[in-house]
Image (cartoon, rainbow over all chains, first blue to last red; front, side, top):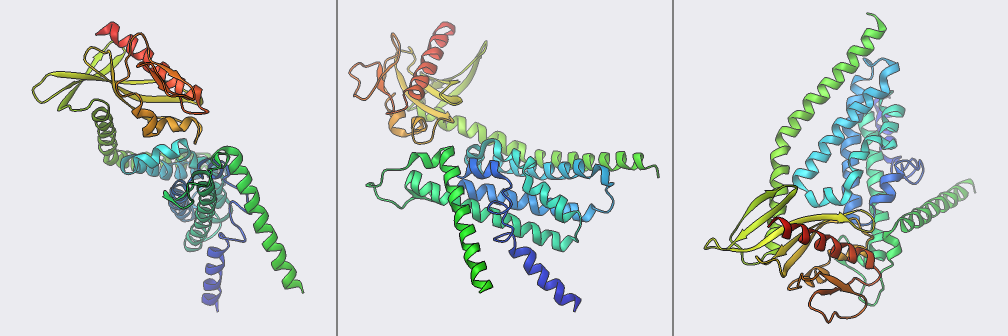
Length: 209
Length: 182
């Protein structure tokens, strides 16, 4: 019985990050990288994967050490753990993927202060077991990644006529440069939020009927 | 155990582990990062001064430049790293010059954060290629919305005069400084 419950909640904890507790569309966390780096799919994907690595590793460590950390100093200790993994990602990108590292600029080091990661450490990993914390981290961070890819995709297609660097719209389409600028980020994010909420509303009405 | 002491110990412990792990990662990645930087420098030098066999880094006061030689050891040009302010941030570039500094052999924009689609187009090959063969005396200039008719001028990117002017200004300022030390 207990095992069955566990299995069920593992699924729930993983899936919730994609829709019900999507970090961008529901919790509206991590807005700074979300708006700044999603000018193309590859930028969104790299940012997302960096967050997957940092969030999963730090949730793992936080949930392992949660019982030996005195409550009063938990935030500084979490930040040190998160900063360690972020610095690793930053050095890795500089060593192996220099162009991407340049494109993402300061936003990789800034993952340290990304509220999604501290949020998961504080709200989940510091209270739950190791396995569930990792599952939760994977769900939330992949939910984050997919949303960044969608945002980056829309902005790249309309702003540069390309998707993942491949041309998809013909020469006849004049690129909407505004999509690559900050207003384009806000407009696209706003529309995505609207779409998500209207789908949720419709689902709810269907269920109540 | 005293609670305060425990807090201190735990924080120190985590800071030490973090420091240890990071210095290990740094030890592995530092040579790779260094090699990346050198490779990028090499690529941009070969890009702006054509037909060279080797180059040597020279430092004169605050200025760094590269003396480029062909296979027989003849100086065929100089590559000059330069930077300055653009419309939104710093623009870094490499300028290639003939040995008498009278002509630009090519430029390469290394880093810029100009507006994508407008000023950002200074990174496009078409814009950079314009600088090939441009005369540097009395100074490099630019014209708007038409093909240049002087051999010192390039055409600014449409709608991005400030970014284009910044590139020209950075080049001029560095050539003037370079003339003094050479």
